[in-house]
Length: 279
Length: 259
Ligand SMILES: Nc1ncnc2c1ncn2[C@@H]1O[C@H](COP(=O)(O)OP(=O)(O)OP(=O)(O)O)[C@@H](O)[C@H]1O
Ligand SMILES: [Mg+2]
Image (cartoon, rainbow over all chains, first blue to last red; front, side, top):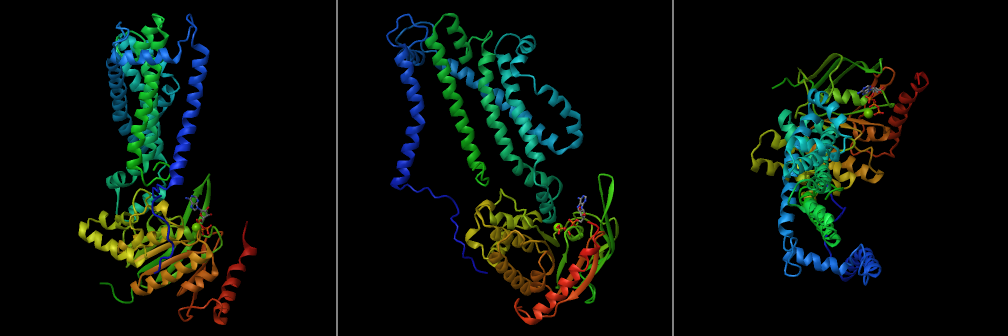
């Protein structure tokens, strides 16, 4: 049998000058808008001594002081590390716990009709309840403090992971089961060799959404009765009318959320090279 | 070992009903067929006459409502590696490379690593895809995917290959090439092939024997032996003669159709 089709197997990374140029242009386009916003912010705020919104330069100085200290030497100085660490550990702790519960549960719900009939109505009923609406109840159950925040993160990440896992398992092409069983792969082996890999792209979609939600929820969770964390620092700064600190907190959350999403994407890309939509 | 006269496949008065929203659909009614080992059989017939249903019963994906389906005299009970299905839309595992797709069956049957590797190499070569061994299905053309699907069932030692319009989604040129390649493999391996197609020409080009089916209810209407010399020439007068005969058989039923 002859093979004449010479399709390239993987998009090779050609580093020709035109490609470099294209990348540089993409990078320029990507920073153009933030740069414009920064400029507008600067123009509209600088020079006003009594302004409600601090100019970007004040925020930059504050961010430095928050991270390393040595400028204001007040209660906020050099505390950023502690707050970032507190939020990170809650986000990743809650998220990891959610993944640990939601993925196996989703696999079982997707696969076993009896479990689905038992749990699905409850899940559908609780799903529309916003995570923030759980806050008062969480504070009653877990008390004021980091445990409530942790719980909210767990809850926020739980649903996207669960629902996407169930969806992934349910939408495996039935032909693949037939193909597997005709090739001698049955029962438990089929779960491992067909269901798991087929559901993986969906699971990852769930993980990404879940982690994104975790960052949304953590701030809400840390806004009441917690001493550390990015949500706490924003809340405290608001009460002290330190708007530049509030903006610093927002920036750091944005960056942390962005980086953690990149991390998931990176893992995703390694595991799902086979999937045209994910690879 | 079975006696030489025993057919590899025997279908005895098979009926298959489906329930569809309270209606009973007779997908197959009283189908009988005996296939000797090594024969290339084409099933042809109008849409809805039960070709896929029959093939899926042979594969073990469906069970007959009534009747017996025997392979080497033993009832077929569920899917098994002795029968391999080649689907129209390939049904390759998208998360496995070409190599891993072909090795899936041998690995599932518990062959050792070295043995799996050898088997895969052999069938990669047979279908001419050695260069693409580490590609994923989404990186292949339709024709290449179907070659992988064929190699996958051959690597699993299937004695009977069931093909449901396997080349239906391919362009004419790729289709012709795959027909040649399939015949080549069939002649070398002495496989038994049950091949569903909509194309009279494809059936005559490939088959030792063409089974014509008619719908409403799905029945086997006639059974035509094709004794043209191989390789066959689609423009030869005797090829045309068979084409005319089959065309008449297929179209004579259209007027009787309920729909
Ligand atoms: N799972 C099913 N449930 C209900 N009815 C079915 C099912 N599978 C097939 N049928 C019905 O059985 C009949 C035969 O279908 P089948 O798919 O075997 O036809 P076919 O000859 O393969 O048609 P085509 O050439 O269009 O592929 C049709 O009327 C179809 O609607
Ligand atoms: Mg069909």
